[in-house]
Image 1 (tube, rainbow, N blue to C red):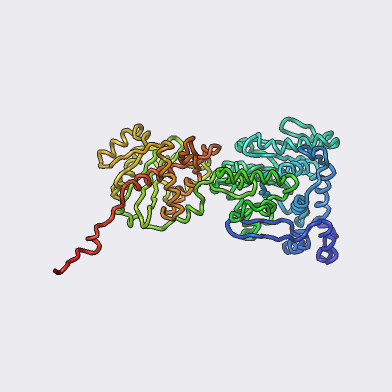
Image 2: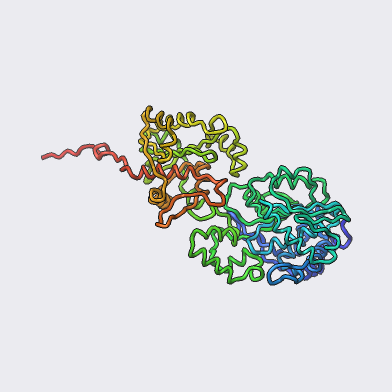
Length: 577
């Protein structure tokens, strides 16, 4: 039951509210400061709103519980890194605010209201140190017998980042270290049968856990939601479990992390209801000036403390001097989602070329096809490029094997099965691409659109063998494209130029849009460029549709537009003499 001092009468007293605000030391600075594709969520909200946050009496605020977690941090934990090593953990106001919210709000039965804390914040804001302290609190001071606390991340090394800090802080406290037994990747508390452990990402090994606390680091690198679901569903038998997800923005808007981020934004704005979820998102808006120091401070609550201004200025200058670093800077330091690791075609630029069109309307327009046959993991892509209006229109086809489509979806972090069901993706029988099935469909579309030429890469001419022979026998005009830097440079730059001029259109195919978001540009020593996958994400990114599009566009641009004779448009002029 709630203690008497939290009764409605006292909670609503003006004197009580003033005391509460002084006690917390926070001021009203805003709420949801931005609406649109992304939000900036400012979190210093005065506790004079405590009554309105009780949700009609369903929740109450436990001052003692909130004070207790703050005292634990500031009296029991010693910082172990950088200039603050050896000093007590003095929380910043923004950290105090979040801890008080998460640990102070209670349900009628006295258990915590919030079971899931989504904390999205740029790098260098001490989030790992904060979460290490939370893990130790859940292990030592939360009053949970047999507590199981876990750190998890995309790989074992990342999971140990938070654990390593927690272990060092535990060993720096004589009382805590006397109770705990530190191991390589685990801290045991034998007296209460509890432990804190860093675990790797293989979800299939995690069934059978009974987690009280979970710290999940850098959610944006998770390939899918399997580990997250396995861990969170293991908390079902606990009275007041807590999952803390910490992440920076990523560069794959089709990922599980982006879905979770979007859900968090909707919860924070009130568009979706989840009273057990607490949201803290620090991020600049996509339209904000990333060179503005005010934007830096707004997105980084520890600016001037763990983040030095001169360091930030150096990073900004690096982004100015090196355009390929700009997206990295935006993601890591301003928490802005990007469509690729390095900038090429933005989502807004691509979306501006989308048109709704019936393919029957395209029959008879000058048309060229670009074909890219997949390797084991890639997509097989065919893109038709039509002369359309004042520019060109792209209409793609994509194939994957039907067998293993769900596993492929997990590996690539996209919904192949959904795209198949929506008609955007074609499949072939078996577990590898059946060339005969693809060749037959390519021929059918080639003949249907009265295509002038089908362009394949030079390597493909050597490798396709029987497929090329089949096409040639059936009247397909085959052209080749050598996929080197020198050949790619001009059509790649033309592709970009036409998009910016709003003269390159597409039929809004979501797979082609995803391929565009995956592509970045690579340059050779001569300044030539070509589209490639980001190095660290090659295994899960696909750009086959981009390559096929550029090949088709290159050929379409090389052939003069099919203009009608003037006599077909106005007839012959007759002069009387």
